[in-house]
Image (cartoon, rainbow, N blue to C red; front, side, top):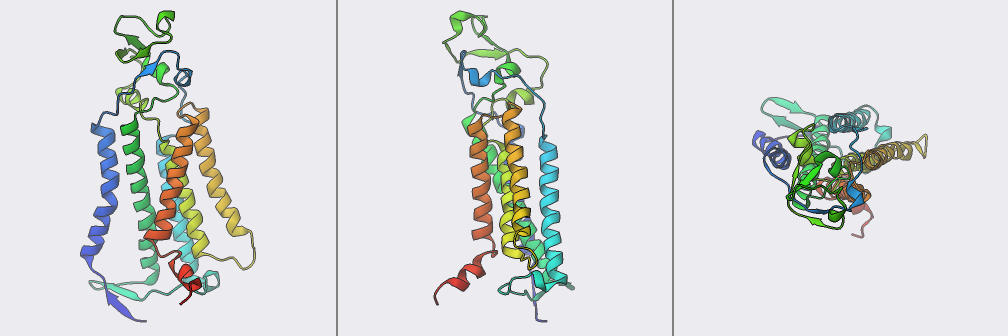
Length: 281
């Protein structure tokens, strides 16, 4: 099998570029104050009670990343040991040399597809959090978390303030953390929805390109359905938990799908060979 060398510097650059969008998102959450959006006292959409998460951010991140990475690993492992699951137009990579180590095509594929998966997650988090902080939409439970007192000492429960546009107020709820108060201001778009739909559609696009099942016409599509259903459940839970407005979840879902589409169809070679094979020459 032919071999060629690979630069450690290029690999290091890949890791730096992968981390940059995620680091910017982290800085936003730690050090930046979101846009301070005002409200009407009679806005019923922000008067829902505060509830715990059905799916916490940590649970979503761990399960989403681990399941997606393991899924890619399993598919590539099947490719390595059983060619019957590969499409005829899948090109075999040549081995590469990194210093004295031989980098097999299997490791190259893992590096490429898991790297793209994580890069997409980083981009998705950057765009989602950036939009959240710029828009500053109030969550459905904002009033319950904030319990605002107006500059005149009154509250929104006073009928005189019912139709008033409130721009000068103080949150008085001492039972929640500062981060919970900040988090109540970053509803749009839903980060749970964008992350879960990105991971699910990446895996759905990935298996569509990388795996064929000769024994069943529906197995691949059933696996895709499982991923999409999990993302849909995650998004709907954000509405029933009063963490997001329905439009937040819709926007987050669309964002995650678009990023998965761009990563799979434009950043990777998952579909390029298949498209080229049907184009006139």
